[in-house]
Image 1 (spheres, protein in one colour):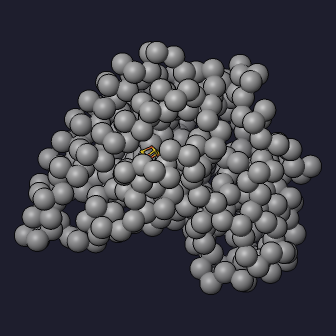
Image 2 (cartoon, rainbow, N blue to C red; image 1 turned 135 degrees about the horizontal axis):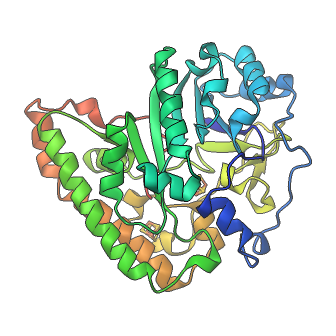
Length: 363
Ligand code: SF4
Ligand code: SF4
């Protein structure tokens, strides 16, 4: 099982699409659910209690998460000193250099929030952000980091996902994924989303074409949404919610309360249990997803989005059309991908990947 550890509820950034939108939305998800902030701002679970909980799981994976997890470096040292398990982290990257290599190099997959090139990233996240992240990544590599550095983009307002994804590979990331900033705030839906979605779909089509061109030359770009969906199409598996929330992954809050996912930290409706429990409550997407004809491939985008229903129906349908477009584009490439595998041009294990540690498959 994968566990996000909420190291702190604080963040050292004020990004346009996160902090910015939250500050300007009065009628938000907090009015739909019962929300209570943990009395503990930073991760305060006794490690012996966490140890007793993890001992019940044969394969725990711990993911440092926040707020910004690197605001709590000493706690990270303590946890890593206590547990010999696989570690992952999701961070904004600004403080990457503050974790000594003996710790950082053991966190073998690190998701860093970055939205594309310098202009795009700095527009969303503040001047100088891009440069700091790239500098910190280089420093990590120079200090022996050999793990996977994954760019996590938020697509907000600009549909050119193809250009930005390719930029991030050129900038040195090993993998890229993204999430559409759509359906997570009530106030940001407008009729402008329809033309945006059309342009975004065209950009996805271009990116799939570019991905295939590289594949024909034997180079596999680890674009998580593509790899995850193609893996399912090749195997014919029926997928559950692809982030794992509420069935294969949970978030452990700062006081030890366990939630379906880190975004729902504090929402009483999504409490899955406590560290004393030997089994956790499971969750699944409801509503339109239950009767959707592509549910077994999509998995249901997001438990939070589906439960919160912050956008009107027509907006949610447009989001689902982007998912449908993405899946259809990849489905059309399956015969050629099978041929590339059968002729030995690409290895069959190309599409094996670790699920549930954070990369979005359905944007
Ligand atoms: S396409 Fe939309 S309705 Fe269908 S399963 Fe995915 S999120 Fe649910
Ligand atoms: S996709 Fe939705 S349910 Fe899954 S982790 Fe993200 S916010 Fe939570």
